[in-house]
Length: 278
Length: 180
Image 1 (cartoon, each protein chain N blue to C red):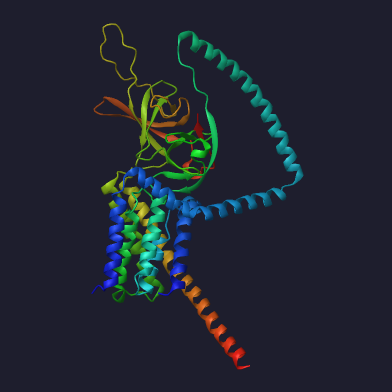
Image 2: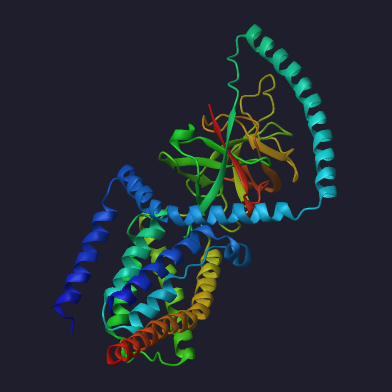
């Protein structure tokens, strides 16, 4: 038999659960941010311990190794400076040409470095918590990238932290383009493998010939072709690498193509990430 | 369940959630997150007749886990509390003294908690997961909890013994001082 305190506890928890489930989404996100803030002290401790360990590691690195690394980095800086000079010339030329044909100028990105401090504890979602928020200029829907490519976007943010949604989650889609063929599609989640996404609605046609009214799909897609963001969705800027095509198949009774794309970024080993801010 | 035990359980829940969300080692090894909360739930439900332990694990653990997840807030609370409450009410009928029995309990609860959580999640949201992926994750969670449950029992018993011995020693010392 249930005793009175048991009834009270079960009733109180049931009311709490019903209340939480009926909260509006915006308010739920605020409550989540507040509750997850309770773990901040331990994240801070962990971060401090990591830094101390790294510092200790630096102390025991031999001077010869550091000198060699320094030399290599100097060489790399020289090469990058040279590349930057070339890019600047191309950019200025591109700006002039855009101006001539009346295209709007591209808005340059600014990258805000961030670190993942927590991952989704459930097996069914692909979200993570990062250590930058509104005070760092991060806003909802800001793209999140690594040096290898696109990883997702910000879904909620408070002053010092943000939650990001990773590519491959059911709620994260991106407009993409196959760079080798120019076909446009939409990147969606692929259920069976977290390192793969589906690129669907691939519908580039051949240029319509005289007398031809139907734009037919082109079949020149090949495994290994690079896929990048197309910039059409309005969320992700164009040209950020997403992955490489693994295989292609016909879907929708041949109406369009669908390709499986292996992501360029290894999501289980995300270290340095960047939020794209205006 | 006394105050110290509730506090130690509270701290354990706090650390368990931190390990799940903040430590990547298990993710690399097992290909996904694993939670220590089901193992703590078995301990709280079986070891103590009071329901406070289950309430701490269910409410505090559930809220903390949901706050880091896309799962609707409250789903983990409902799952953990319902399973813990049922187990706590029937604890007299469940064999739990032997490590093997605890391991078996861990296996069942480690499978049931994410399964019910997943069913509740699917009723409200639509995550992108395939059936083999779900079964694989449930199996990993079950095996991890089966291994962790006897260890959790042992850890808390050791903690309890440590605090108990200290009390006796303090009492005898104070008796000696007072007699002197």
